[in-house]
Length: 98
Image (cartoon, rainbow, N blue to C red; front, side, top):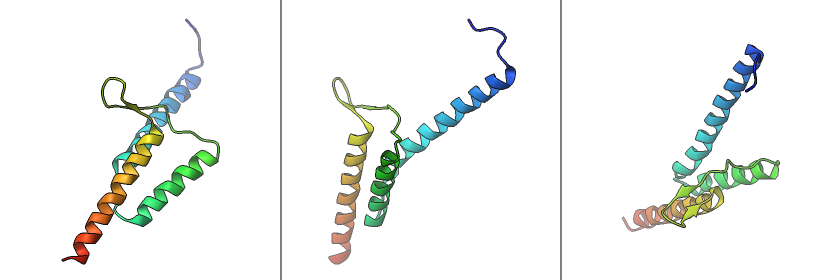
């Protein structure tokens, strides 16, 4: 056990952990908020590309869909955007036929 650590150091470490949790929550929110326009789909794709191209990586978290069915962030993003584009196309068709 490490003893006699500087209290300010410990406070900074605690705050860093809190901020990292907030970042993880924000990343997850990107996958839970479906774009409602093609512009929104394009913006999310650009953001994901620029995020990774600048040397960052998404948190190592997975959705568990049952035994042997883990889905990483990359798969989640593609599935989520495919669902969004499908929903946009359906709404567009409904408007044209209304």
